[in-house]
Length: 319
Image (cartoon, rainbow, N blue to C red):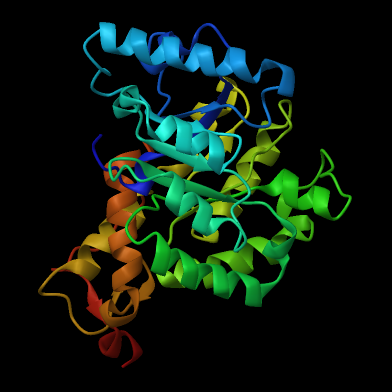
């Protein structure tokens, strides 16, 4: 399958592999605008239903094959096996050529080698989920970062932060009146963004499990983006449009990024009433351009902005 940018993930919807309508979702016939889909064989499937789920997955892939393959513009398709042993079995299916990758549940230092050995197909991307007790330990995350770089180079599209499982490790559940950033997850997300993000790994945000608090979801999404997270798991189709709106880039940021990346940019200049310094802001600008490419620009009236012809060098402003 085609390699994808992490910024293309957007809102990622999980569906149990036992559902009968997955084919319609894969072809964009049921959930409009969905950009990434995970067919789940792990937590969303009871132990007694595993074989049924595997059979359903095979029937799904056979149906895709009968249609001549996936349609252009449909969601990126992942499968979440229960463990590395199941992943090894699926890795041998020739029909997995219609899948973009595996979500790796509960990745840790203890099982990373097993996953490396299980998924040998180079065309399958990996999207590990960080959701075990060791995630709270920065030194363990530094070790895991090194192991990912050494054992799975170029295989990781993004790292998922498993918020509910991590809260469960503490015996906690979020309240319906607070974002995750009002809980110990604030520390975890910030730490992971620093440790994993500094090594070039993209990270996606935990689920928002309330369905009747859209304003709180918007607040949490703003904090997700402020921490550099590039997507978010959706628990219901009603959340998809909200997540995608939040991931869109403002016109002000897009124009600022373009100016920073311009070959004629001054060393320091004023733009949109803010200091811009290409040597410092270059990576941010690249990420804004990439996000805008995949998620678009917010359809809002932008404030009046300088162009390079009318911008001011910071020295001129100060002087």
